[in-house]
Length: 373
Image (cartoon, rainbow, N blue to C red; front, side):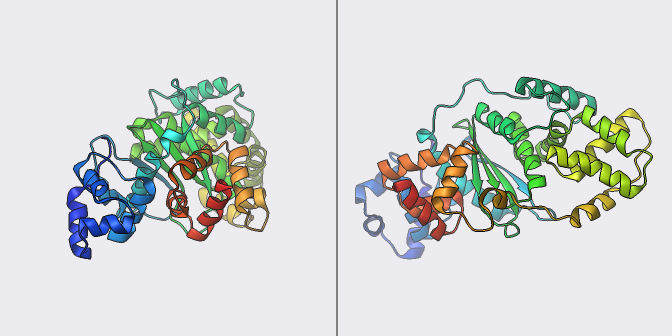
């Protein structure tokens, strides 16, 4: 089997809790033989039993499940500014990954031929050539604003599953989480909808870069390339060239306003436009425009931006029905159809939804009820 329980972790937890295997079986409402089979590696607990066992024994999922070479989830975070990824963050995301393994069999068949970037490079002109290829395949010219539908379609073609979540604007360390399951050959991408509209498209493009370059996922090299790819994809060299011409020779306030006009037309941040203009200017050996990163951030901070969640749902928290519908219709999220099947066939409870979506149990209960209807 690809997944087994860690006998040592379970034995140690049983001793600490003062449970026998028979007592564990009773509390999990399974037979003693079932627990014996789990520990011998002949069978593996269903998700709801695994969740209950983790709670009863107070053992994290990544400790409870035996790590097998090539089976462990690969994690990448799109962090909030100034935050640090800790071991606790990685362990928590890995635990979500192990639970997602049980979801895979209920997902639609994924494409066997998937778009990939075989030779990712940070070199400016080589990256720009790759961007032209990507946009050509999308049927989008290099000066046309990229739409969300283009990005979402590429995630589907690449065999990735988008999971929009409402994680709060400032409560968490991450804006997005990328969980790749190598053995299952699938990637799940959590996108926090409680983020600024002007940043959201960049984060989606950043995650798409990870999907295009699976061998780099989880590495510093992968993060650097994903940032470079996202900026270039959303605002390619021809766009940067025009923006540079509009800003050069102007005073700093006028230059910033000129860059912002391009940002608004592409639905991205003025900082992304500034970075791409700066890269173009340096590559072409041209003089810099009359503004700095500090001035750009000051301009951004002085201009409020609405959240994606507010644009989708208004100021009130959406009902479970509205939320699920938006995920499925707008983001083509395949997770909820899989959860419907798991709830029906395996009788999993709200706790499974709570763990998989990493949301409060009260919200998970409402979504579970909606999916069970």
